[in-house]
Length: 340
Image (tube, rainbow, N blue to C red; front, side, top):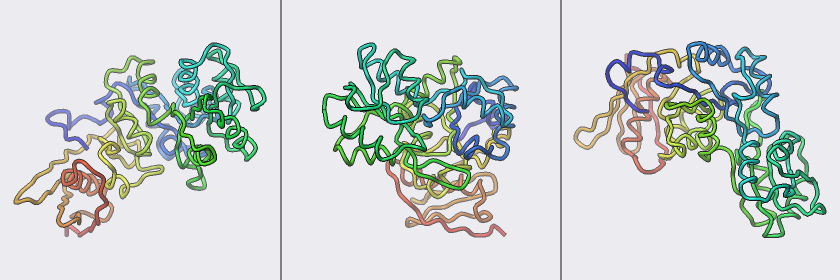
């Protein structure tokens, strides 16, 4: 998490950016229900003059349905504010295939609609002689559809594109298998690996930023391996919010390409100044401080002086541990001690 000097530290974090590129599942909602405070915070960011775009790997719903859902939760949204991995996959295939080429769709109707929108022809069976297979998340996908994809991909000349490879997806009842588990099943059957169109690849983020002409966007997400890695790939700053898949213990153990610029508990904290995080190295020992919290690294252990699981304590712990391990992922033992 990057330190910022001077007056920058006194401003609300959101004022450092001209656009927020937000993930949905785990950031705005979990299943049909809003995450506490998220819609209100995003509505406020827009009312304060910042663009808010929604970048999602969920290819099972059309942008209009996504926009309607977000609006119903209290954050007015238009179709143009939504960028999906289905759109990214359709654009990728349109670049690589001839117009009117047939594409076997292993996924929802929304994915087929995006394939059709770029001038390609969606089909559902190997017998229709597709030139490519596109695979996206669909909660109703079954064995027969996965088998049809595998049969088609036995021909090495058939292109294979996955909208995304998220291993899990947050739902209101907890964490469920995501599209990556279904892609893995086809990969295991065929011995092939797909092209990936959505997060963590850079184009989907750049498309979102370009739609609103953003010069200083920030990616907001709950997953290190899609949202935060994608921000790194797109050379953008990132905000990890602890309301979805990844928690502070996975954040501190992340590889350099998945380390966020900022760490928030909820989206409400966008409107608070982000605290300075200062790192020191003395006599070969690394330490970091964030307001009243302090963290020190010694022999693979991070000792945090702060109340248990205090967010500033985690910020200091991450900064110290990452300074100690700048080039590789490593999982520390974290010990908390009461400052009193």
